[in-house]
Length: 102
Image (cartoon, rainbow, N blue to C red; front, side, top):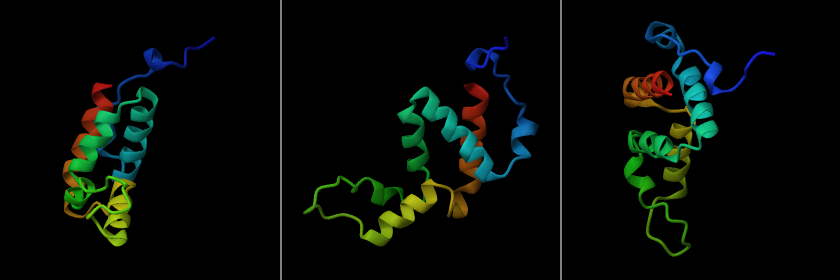
């Protein structure tokens, strides 16, 4: 019987990870963070997105002065990999670092 838990996982090299697309890195890092229930990782990613300032105002209350629906949609698109824009190199580095350390 082979192990399938985190102990059996081998850490990919930087070169192996760097060869992947940003979207593949995001998917792998997010899957690992979900498995580890690492909410801190998700918050660190949000802070690096272009619309991160708007994220601070997303408190969910109906009378809150905050982002418009368009800004919330833009933030969600960036968070899910559909608009990294100028933050792509920084996010790639964060994804690679997370995958190598965990």
